[in-house]
Amino acid sequence: METLNLNTIQHTLSLNDENALAELYHYYYKRLIQFAKSIVRTNELAEEIVEDVFIKLWRNRVSICNIKNLNVYLYIAVKNTSLNTLSQKARQLVSAPFDFLNIELENELDNPDDLMITAEMMQKMYRVIDSLPPRCKMIFKLVREDGLKYKEVAEILNISVNTIDAQIAIAVKKICTALEIKKPSKKISASITEK
Amino acid sequence: MSSNNFIWQLMSRCLSGEASAEEVALFEEVLKKDESLQQRYQILKQFWSCAHSFSISEDEKNKKQINTILKKAYEADILNTDLTKSKIFKHENFFKILISSAAAIIVLVTGFFLINKKSSPNTVLQVHEKNLQQVVAQKGSRNRTILPDGSVVWLNAGSSLSYTGNFKGLIREVYLKGEGFFDVVKQEGHPFIVHANGIDIKVLGTAFDVKSYSEDNTVEATLIRGLIQVTRQGEKNQKPVFLHPNEKLIVDLTQNIPSEKIKAVNVPVTLPEIKIYHLDSTIKTENIIETSWVYNRLEFRGDSFEELAKKLERWYNVKIIFEDEAVKHLSFHGSFENETVNQAFAALKAAVPFDYTINDQEVSIKTAASKIKTMK
Image (cartoon, rainbow over all chains, first blue to last red; front, side, top):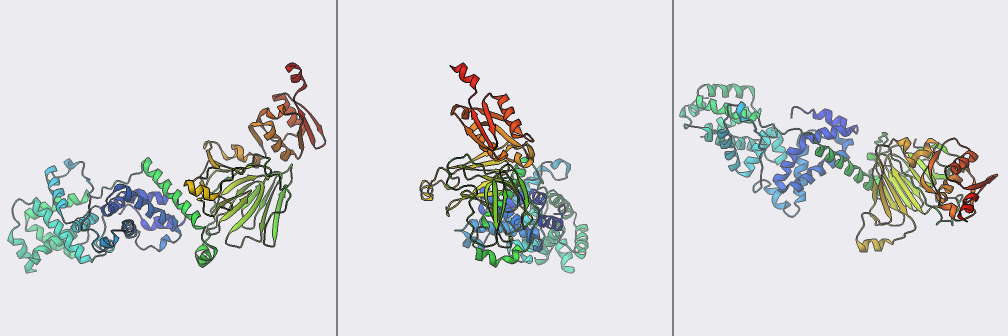
């Protein structure tokens, strides 16, 4: 998220700069298409949805500076457009949007060699993430891969920050447990309770 | 149990950058006491940092995609101006934001003659409102006018442009007879509409050229940049045709297909009588034939003498009479810039032999006598 100054982009967009739109699009389209795909499940639909969101964004560029957090706005716009697209399922989906959906993770690591992480560890971690409950997986993905803040994810998924906190902890715990050779010693929990 | 979960929350917050300074310090304390956890934390940290790998790609496909997005956005903008007037009025505040950046379009509406002879070029246009303004370019001359909104119009020989009032309304409307080149100032929410010989051309902010001489039976539009929407008058439910840069549109006014029929055959996107051609996009604006007249050049590319005569009549304000049929079918390539009538005909004759006599404003043309002899 750090590489893009959203305030500047918003400002230049409001001045009709088509390049600003291109910059924004290049930065976001992959993650947004993935996010849309987790709801609508097909690539084609997901691409259309993201296209739609950007068309609307461009058409409303005059008032784009009124958007407080463009990052969150884009995800929410994609979510809403996706849910609208699934008009028949929308009702069902609004109440439990991510409970029975396909959440795909970006398979990012091409060069595990330069890390202390072995390919085996990597596989282990992905297996754990894959086995997470859908909602937990979605939250984990948005925090880790999309680099969103807890608060932002909470806003996008319409759940509390505490839930995010707890869900991420569950994911991290499971991953750590999978990486573990020995069981975690009782010492740790003891040291915390002392606090 | 809850304390155990707290460790994982702490670790998660540290990984995702949500932890406070105190939490970070606390977690470091915990790690010092547990080497195994420390190791796994390091692994996770690396796993975390390699996650932001959404490459910011800018390949050809994405560039195309951006163009698609922009194109669709502009099309939607133009379609939205089809809102009823009352609806537009409600949103007037929104339209107060005027954007003066002007894109450029060229629309050429050209005619291929002869059908609509009924109305003479000098007929007063049907405009209901008072305060009618009219700009005329007589045959043999061209002129340039600035409209009340700052838009610039060039009128070709034998053309006229009418509009009402001072363009303060919701729509900027002009009525064109003949050919005009428009450079329209963009005003958000105030579409600019050119009514020309049976078609309406709607733009938001562009430069374009319309040629629709009433004696012609086709209307042509050529777009250089921007986007315009073309509709045939009197067909309410038709889908508009969009014209994109370097496209030329020809509407054949002789084919009158009722809209019900179009609906019945279910081909609403492109009306059959509207054809779109692609221009060579590498040519500079001033070298495009359709707009050459703006640069004071009369261009003709393989025109039959009959077609060329119409252009010459307007360009030089002369009357051309063909004394036999055969001579009408000669064809010519070329361009005139500063030539007089005499020089022009001498040049044409040098290229393709024919006989002519110039009498005041009248030119008589017939097949070359030498040619007739050889034929005999």
